[in-house]
Image 1 (cartoon, rainbow, N blue to C red):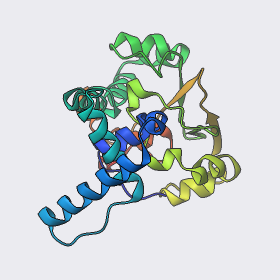
Image 2: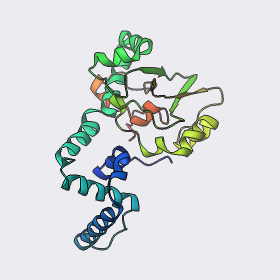
Image 3: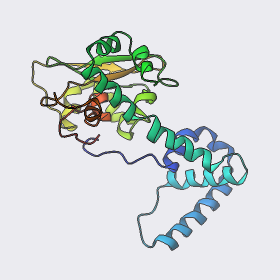
Length: 245
């Protein structure tokens, strides 16, 4: 579950999440034949490789059929993915955190009204209508989960990683948060309190990590580069080494 960065969201993964509800509209026979043709073509072009999963084949088949029928524009799909990978994502959250580290007044506003303070930097919208920011301190470590599904603050963190949506994380983060944190490489002292926040359709949480020591002379931009997605979920700590999310 821990220790590996998620690969960038590709078209097939995106459609798997976003278009699952429309899959029933496609005839099974068409889907199967299209998937088989696509698999054969890829094997011929790329040579021996691991066979794609059944889900990947179905998603690709669905995409091909929707494009053929004029129901989906590939350029539009690419634009949406680019938006969530580059414009809406952890970079936004990192800028919020970095500003809170260097601007005490902004930090106070962020903890008082996360939605409004985040909007000051131009971030907001779907999946981020009501944001609550919780602060890590030497005595308190916060961890965010969604026990029901995968509620996640898209405007500041982008699309949720696979492990965040997994059943093991969603259940164990509540039952055994310290164990989960250890799997992500975070070991806390016994006197540190762990607080678990359950995101819902109404409220999305963002962790304000502790500022790493030795960063006093860094600029806001440099500090933002140290903030990872995992640190803003609470499964990692911000580090002056800029560990990858």
